[in-house]
Length: 140
Image 1 (spheres, rainbow, N blue to C red):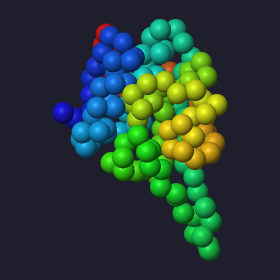
Image 2 (cartoon, rainbow, N blue to C red; image 1 turned 90 degrees about the vertical axis):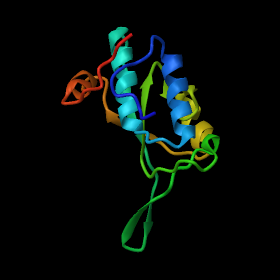
Image 3 (cartoon, rainbow, N blue to C red; image 1 turned 30 degrees about the vertical axis):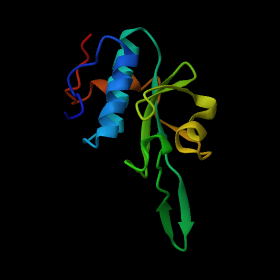
Image 4 (cartoon, rainbow, N blue to C red; image 1 turned 180 degrees about the vertical axis):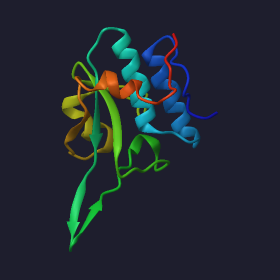
């Protein structure tokens, strides 16, 4: 079963759990697509989500190295050098763990590292971003 691009189940918890199951199954999964689908749902509820980017870089000589991000919850099944997550009301809606994670402890809880979340798409820009050329329509 590939990542859903067309529908969001009735509840966010159901969607987060289904995406977590997809992740641990080894099927293709895209964190930015999931973040956009979650953001659409939160916008439809009248909330103000934004999308965060998490990445850690190090200078190694003259080159920039992107440190691998491997969430222990997935037991080495997945590693990224950049990860995206939908955030709203001081929590991240994180399919990696199948639920919500407080922003204040997000990177430590999910990746066991202290890494700052960057704003990838702001609250202001999100409505336009999630409606641009993508067919991930939300259904409930």
